[in-house]
Amino acid sequence: MALFSKHEWFSNIKGDTLSGLVVALALIPEAIAFSIIAGVDPKVGLYASFCIAVIIAFTGGRPGMISAATGAMALLMVTLVREHGLEYLLAATLLTGVFQIIAGYLRLAELMRFVSRSVVTGFVNALAILIFMAQLPELTDVTWHVYAMTAAGLGIIYLFPYLPIIGKSLPSPLVCIVVLTIVYMASGMDIRTVGDMGELPDTLPVFLWPDVPLNIDTLLIVLPYALMLCVVGLLESMMTATIVDDLTDTPSDKNRECKGQGVANIGAGLMGGMAGCAMIGQSVINIKSGGRTRLSTLIAGVVLLLMVVFLSDWVSQIPMAALVAVMIMVSIGTFSWESIRDLKKHPLSTNIVMLATVAVTVGTHNLAIGVFVGVLLAALFFANKVGNIMVISSTDVKAGKEREYQVVGQVFFASSQRFMAAFDFKESLDKVTIDLSRAHFWDVTAVQSLDRVVIKFRREGTEVELVGLSEASATVVDRYAIHDDPQAVEKLMGGH
Image 1 (tube, rainbow, N blue to C red):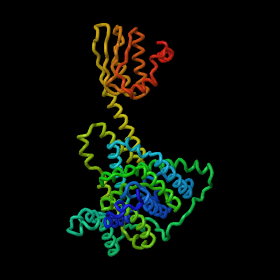
Image 2 (image 1 turned 90 degrees about the horizontal axis):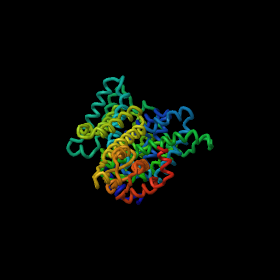
Image 3 (image 1 turned 30 degrees about the vertical axis):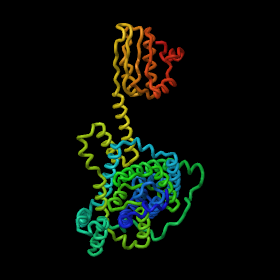
Image 4 (image 1 turned 180 degrees about the vertical axis):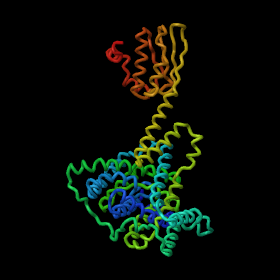
């Protein structure tokens, strides 16, 4: 894949430039806020967002997706920063990047196949709720001016696109930020601005190696944090890539994205920034503002740095109410409203998985735990469902002498008890034939249940014949079955 393919970079220059501007403006307060959450200087989050966005534009596997410093990652850093300081956070960021590159080469992104649609929907809804909740501090204990500005911002965002000609040519979130900033500067009202969030850096980032001793003690301190950051970062990035795939109806290279995230985090760590990952909110802003290619991500990163360093006097004047309005738009646009309508149509198990993912993610503020619970529940429901799709019937071949059992369905750990219960061991027969041509044996538990059935019949003096084993099932049965090994049989039955 060419690094500069025209389609991936220059097929949508106007849309990408304007959307990149919007994203850059929206990234500034978020990067500062996430720095404050992690307990570090605002510079750390801003430099990280610049580095990650610029590097991922070249190395990522999903054009149009925005990666930067994120709240999910910041929450994991709090303890490390408090107990050991910034230098150890930078070391953990470098190690996180290394783990993510390894994950990319091990093709761990393929594991996304096991995340069901209901888990992705729950994840998206939880993130929408978390994005909205993150805006609430800006809307509590404030004057009416803030509410008026936020309402005006939302009005601009949703009504501007309906204006003839100009409505379609400019992204409404950008118009909202510019208009409300002008209103604030002209009126001089007493409301919070970006400048109140923290001091903006006035210099470009410089290369610096983390000032930590290179020994086992340091590794043991940063290793658990790096592993957590790696998992959460990749999970959020893979989920966001899936959502952007759906929004744009285009595919992405998830394994390349894993490696790209790793390279970007190493770059951030060497430039004094904290670890980050894909941002669902900013990616949705980018797509909805017209961004489609890698150029939008690159412009977002470069403009972010230029504005923060060279236009800080102007940027610090942006009212927080304008950015709150943009983020509320993001949370409304991110939430899957049809999932509420689908609650009536979808099976109960699907709804439980979706709602559990939302509840756990919002409750813990940890995306990884929410997704893990969702995947676990989905797997249990699936195993139960497949385990019930098994039918065992029997026919008399010779009355009182010979019987044939027909097994249809999947035999594995969840259905093995039902498999054994379907046979009548008390019936006095000379011969039993078990037809397995329409059955599939998946695991050791299934083979053990087959062993027990065969052995119990033989203990009653009945001859047993297995017929019709498929090649796949025969491979598992031949390897693990013991019913033709007298010593193993004795051991299994324990003499009873």
